[in-house]
Amino acid sequence: MPSPRYWREIPSRYRLEAGRCKGCGVVVFPARHICPSCRGEDVEKVRLSRKGKVITSTVIHVPPGEFLMEAPYAIALVQTPEGARLMTQVVDCDPSSVLPGMEVNLEFRLIRKEGQGGILCYGHKAVPTP
Ligand SMILES: [Zn+2]
Image 1 (cartoon, rainbow, N blue to C red):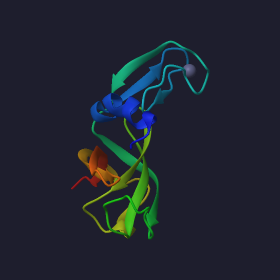
Image 2 (image 1 turned 135 degrees about the horizontal axis):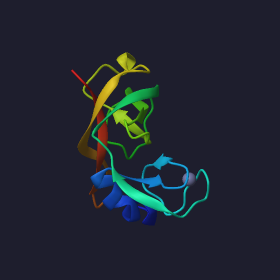
Image 3 (image 1 turned 60 degrees about the vertical axis):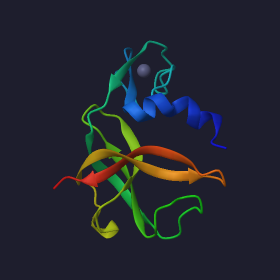
């Protein structure tokens, strides 16, 4: 079964909803009730734009068994214009072509199947901007 954390984060993950701390301005995805930077509790929800830029990336050659995608594939830390950072798979391109500074769009895709029951988990993946 998917973890409780996974279920709890579904709404924010599906909507790309992040939290912006009114105290220090940090934007965190997925949204949290307490700011990880200043511990402030005044966090407002913000929708992230569906684009970003690659900060760092790595190519995975041996994926965890539950993942549907075939290795090798690229995983990148992507920063949105709002300042939120998220780890995401980069698809529809040669994994070795994913480099810092690359512009990407965040698209809603199937991420993985959970267990024998085949529960499908969806989320966002990055696709290089043409
Ligand atoms: Zn803060």
